[in-house]
Image (tube, rainbow, N blue to C red; front, side):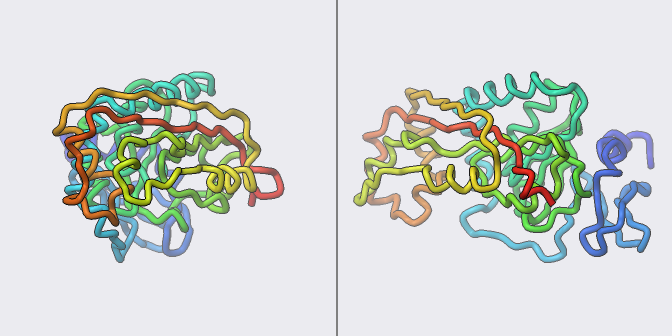
Amino acid sequence: VEEDLWPKFSVFKDQERLFACPICQAPMHLDLSSLVCQNRHTFNIAKQGFVNFLRQAKGDKHYDMASFENRSQILAAGYYDPILEVISERLRDLPEHSHVLDVACGEGYYSRQLAQEFDKDFMAFDLSKDSILLAARQNPQKNVAWFVGDLAQLPLREHSIDVILDIFSPANYQEFGRLLTKQGLIFKVIPHEDHLKEFRQLLPEAQVYSNQDVLEHFQESCELLERVTIAKTWSMPSEHVQTFAEMTPLFFHANKDNLDLTSVTQLTVAGELLIGRIRDDKQS
């Protein structure tokens, strides 16, 4: 590999033994600028520093490049930093060298921030190639192994991951059980019932949100070790309110033209961090 290209591949060199071929499940190794298995299935590392393991990209029209750029803007403005800080505190308690997987990472904000702070191996994936492209572009340090992958069948070896970060994202506990080491932990952030309550009040049905179902689903597969509520109400300029409205799934099926967004001058960002371990009977 040319000398100036090497930094972009080195994170994959460090973590090559964690990957398993998505086609035949054989171990993979870095060969020049590709991850290759013994059966010669080959996945190239893009020049931005990510690997696309999906032959057929499956997209959701709500999650396009514009929506990830909106998310990126809101996260960069710091509105989710209280959540990041609590995750960071808890990661400090863990052994120095561990493998962390950020699930359905979107544009990669949490992994990028945490990888600057910790000497751990960070891997992050999403189903959307647009989001991973954006994540890799915003990571000049090239210290996260970014890849496009499917939560139902990840190209990673069994029991290779120490911590799974699942931040406002779907979960697949069967796959988590396959990936996590014996003492491995899941850090799952779910919306608190106060999350974006000011937006919720604009909706005609103004339903009260409950996270009880998500919590029960977590506890069916995981032993709950800790539960932390993290909430802050921010005063927000109108352009950030608008950007927030564009990115939130809350309004995916609402006609935003009918909503009086000018009435919103503050927003509550509220999540609950659930830290758990896959139950022994669920570990594959």
